[in-house]
Length: 210
Image 1: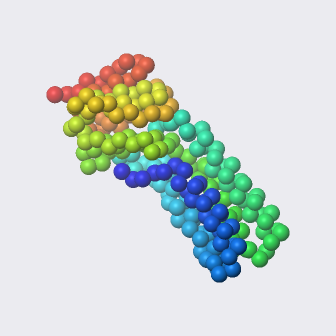
Image 2: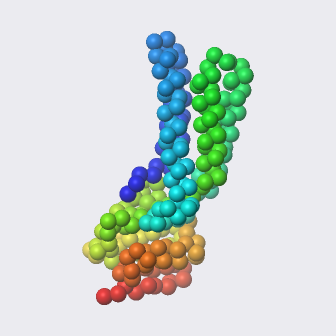
Image 3: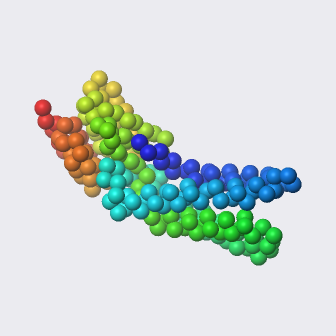
């Protein structure tokens, strides 16, 4: 499963800003900061490309589903991007000696702002090589299809029970009625009616075939 760490790029940007601030105090390392400042560009651009590909249906074996963090993740790029743009702009007006660094900060803010328009839900179900992966942030489970007995879909949880009756929980979801249908259709289209899918609160069940 592709690694998707929702907060990785945010942490990286903050970390790089702190590193640059430290480097700026050491004369020997000052030239390095101009290279560090642009490290985050490929990561943000890659995230944007992934979102665009998903929205355009180019990742058919991945389904994005709602989580409790989606409201925060929807607005954070706009807030963070705006802060970077404003900070970089005013700093540029007051200190033109750091043009490369400050322009990098402004461009990063613009990229984050644009990323906000490409929002997709952060929960993931992925079908790959006869395995199903379920993820919400760091809460991830990957199980071979023939070892899954049933899947329960609740508003706040996805519960995958294996053939040994061990339950694997994906917490902090925010599923609504339409999500139950999307998940059921996604699974049935890729693996057929092989797994019992229990939907709540409707209590409807797709019975697995023998």
